[in-house]
Amino acid sequence: MDTLSHIHRFVPGADPAATPLLLLHGTGGDENDLLPLGRALSPGAALVSPRGRVLEHGMPRFFRRIAEGIFDEDDVRRRAGELAGFVAGARAAYGLGAPIAVGYSNGANIAAAVLLTHPGVLAGAVLIRPMQPLGSTEPVRLDGTPILMLSGARDPIVTADDVGGLAERFRAAGAAVDHRTLPTGHPLTQADVDIARAWIAEAAKAIDPVR
Ligand code: MLT
Image 1 (cartoon, helix red, strand yellow):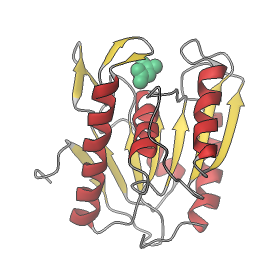
Image 2: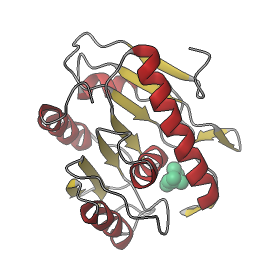
Image 3: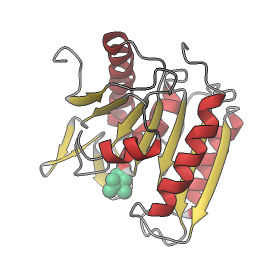
């Protein structure tokens, strides 16, 4: 669909009752990367997978950074707004309910920024190795929004304090946060897939399909 803001892949869902997944890749990924993960996490769900619109030395990302872990916050806000608009456009174009975001690393961070600045766009989120994308934001309500956060105890990029602060911000907004720390580093592992699959199956039961 050329009229939407982001280059993306759309895979129609075989199961109309399954909550759609919004797949958000990490730095250097693209719209194809997480399709196999999406199929593994929720067989039958529609998949929407945009490519980040920022290039860092040729590597797609969802927002600009100044250095590792130091983000251009004006750009984070702008790109979160763009992605929220993309979700609205994709829902209208493909006839979808609100999606659960599944984001890895930079994709988890833009999903966190959407939750903190555009509540109501996402029905829930699986954030794999997230960190705080914005230092402060206006208070928002995320009442009951299910959020799974999967951190790595040996992640050299994300500190426990940073991600713990993010979990607290979501909790303070009323979200239903499940934050787990796995004995691993930054890369995605089979344990992430297994936990996220079981979590999505439970979380989806509580999500209104026509929201
Ligand atoms: C990454 O490499 O993607 C970072 O760890 C996360 C980010 O920059 O958003």
